[in-house]
Structures are given as C-alpha cells and as structure tokens.
Image: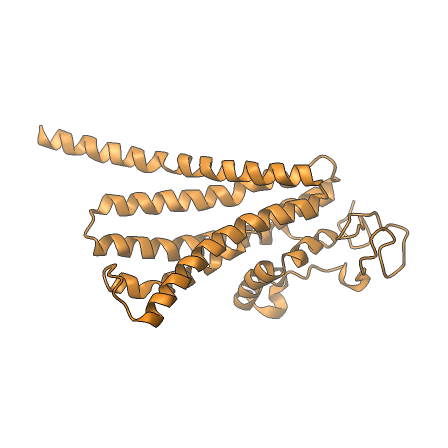
Length: 264
C-alpha cells in the first residue's frame, strides 16, 4: 500500500470515508474538501526545499500553535516520520536550553551551589524528553489502518511546537532576574514580567491541550476516549516528572557519598 492522497481519503472533520466521492463537500458533515491539497504535506517543516530549514521550523511552530486544525488535516496527506521526529528533538532541545539557562542564571544569582543547577537541568530536560514522547502511544489505535497509524504517530511529534517559544518568557522576565528578584520595578517592567509568567504557563498548557485536540481529531475517537486521554496524559506527565528526579537524586547521593568519604 502506498501513502498517496488518493488512498485512505477521509473527511478531516468527521472521518467519513471519501473514497469514491468526487464532490467538493463531505456528504456526512458538509466540510469543504480541498482535493488539490491532498497529495503533498502542507506542514512548513516538511517543505524545507522551498522555505529553508530556519523559516520552515519557525513557521511550523506558529502554524501548530495558532492553527492546530491544519495539523489534524495532515492525516489525509503523506507525512515523513523522520522529519517529524527531527522537529520534535530540535524543539525539545531549544525549549530545554532556553529555560534551563534562565533557571541556572537564577540559581547563580541566589548563590546556590553547582549541584542544584545540574540537578534542575537534568530534571527539566528529562521531563521534556519523556513528556513529549509518551503521549504518542495514544495515537496508534487498532481502528486505524497501518498507513494512517503511521501518520498519526508522526503528527504527534509536532504538538510540542510551543516549547520552541520558551525563550520568550525568559526574555520578558529577565528584568526580574537582573534585579536579583527584587519586585521593586517600574510599572511597565512589572507588567512585562507578569505577562512573561503568564506566557510560560500558556505555552505549557497549549502543549497539553494541543495533544488532546490532535489525538481526538486524527484518531476520530469519541468524547469518552478524548477525556480519558486528557486524564491519562496529566498522570503520565506527573510520572515523567517523578521519574526525571531519580537520576539527579542518584547524582546527589553519589556526591554526598564522596563528601562523607572525604570527611572520614
């Protein structure tokens, strides 16, 4: 079976089987069908030859953030799993490096020792890596044929796109960092810091909501399964955070053991 636009044609709105139908609208829900866009992927990252990798990357982050329904529509077009995974890795690394730099700088200002800096970097990095990967398990129901299941898993790699913008809250809250966490700042600066905190929460929340929305759309599940996924994803993220603390804890215990040996 080849992965072409002529095969596995379903409505992106209701998942109605469109094979053998040539009308411009879905006979089930009335959704407009863009037949001419079903052969090639519309994801900017997958069109790097015409956009370039830099523009393709940032266009994709905005595309996913502001137009998640377009990402869901890609279920009816070929998607390259290797490029999707590459996007996920680069996005997580960018989000991790930007936010970790802020955390480490904050700890430096507070004159904390080096090991909490290393521990926080490890915890945050492992959490992002685990949380961005574990949700894809729900994107492979048996009801989907192998080709569409492969596409669904590939598309799940794009939902972490908001993480690429974690550098922006860091920039907006930089005055607070430079002022050594003294909130005695000018009014406009305080507003920028407050908006930066709100933006950070928004990006993480949007990542979560996007995951639930895309899973429901690409798998065509009912409301019950979508609700179950939301609950399960929240629990999985908490477990990822707990698991991520294990390695730093081991590092701490190792350092503590070396210190005690030195004291003896």
